[in-house]
Image (cartoon, rainbow over all chains, first blue to last red; front, side, top):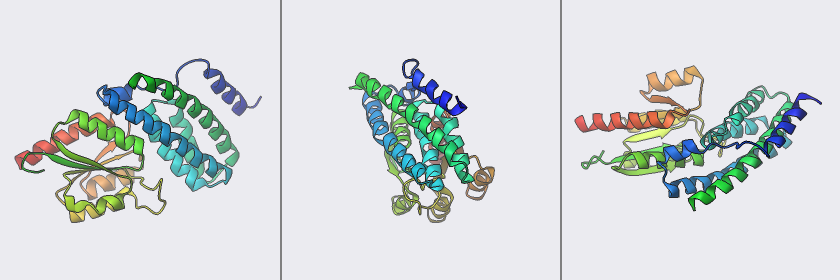
Length: 132
Length: 136
C-alpha cells in the first residue's frame, strides 16, 4: 500500500475515534456567549463547504493559483475550528501550488482534506445543538 | 475616538468566519465600542474612510474572493495617506519578513501573527491605542 492510501485509511478509521475539532478556543474567545458561538458555528457550516468546493473544482482543473488562495484562506478557518492537523496539510498544498507542481500529490492531499472536513463538519453540527 | 471615548473599528478580512470571530471577541472584551464593521476587501474599506475609523485591523491577503482585489499593503498605503490618525493593526498568517518589515517600518503599523494568541494581542493593542488617544 502506498503511503497516501494508508494515510487516508487512517483518517477514515479516525471517524470512529477521537474528535477532530477543538472548540474550546472559540468558546473562550467568545466569552462563552451561546448566541455568538452558535452564529459562528453556523458561519463555519456555511463557509467551509464553499471553500472546499472551490478547492475541489480548482484541483479538478489544475488551477494552482486558486487552490493556493483557497488553501491559504482555509488555514484561517480551520484554526478557529481547532483542527490542528489540517494546518500543515493546507500549507503543503499551498507550497506545492507556489511552484505549480505535482498535481497528483495535491489531489492526494485534497482527498484527505475532504475526509477530515466531512467529519469535522458533522462534529460541528452535533456540537451546535448545545448552543440552541 | 468621539468625545464619549467610543471607538470605531474596521476589520478588513476576506475570511468571514475569522472576521466575525474577531468582531465577537472585541465586542465581548470592550463595552464602549461604537461600531465594528467588517469589509471583505480593502476597496470597500477605503470607500468608508470618511467615517474616520480609530482602528483598522487588516489582513494581508485579501483576494480569496476577488482575484483582482488589492493586497493589504496597498490598502494600508491609502489609509495612512488619507487618514493618518487611524491606527492600523496588520493581522496575518503572512510569514514573509520583508512584507512584515515594510508594514511596520514604512507605514507605522502594528503587526500581529495569526496564531492562537492573536486575539489576546489585539485586545492589548486596542487598550493601548484607546489609552493613548484619551491622553492626546
